[in-house]
Length: 153
Image 1 (cartoon, rainbow, N blue to C red):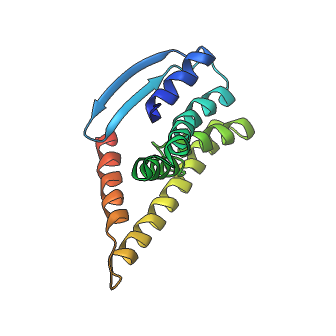
Image 2: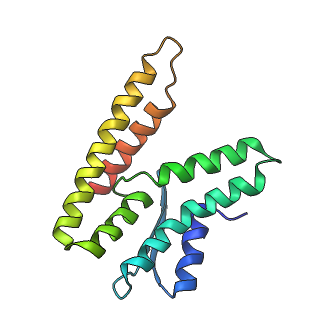
């Protein structure tokens, strides 16, 4: 079954985009591709390929392994959030770069990412304070915060 990262690797290989570096850590696998000579559409396609691989895995296993399908679908949707460091943030960046300059695009992605993270934290706290609390999103938000701080540090 294809995984998220294998989706990125397959798309990059099909589009002739070289892998610069791959590394693993506490917060998952990080792949870095050489997009320097590629168009923004090709870069966006590589970003989109990871979540699409997860959606394909979910669809193929939906009637067989419901838990596996649900996890793959959930992770695919989370990766499409417009957050810096996530595929959704990369796709948004590419779309903005095709329409405006890099300074505006980077600034807009940063602002959208901060707003999305703020909304995620508010929702996480709200869900954690319900009479029948659900801390899943709160755990994700804490993990995202750690991942973001780890990238900057």
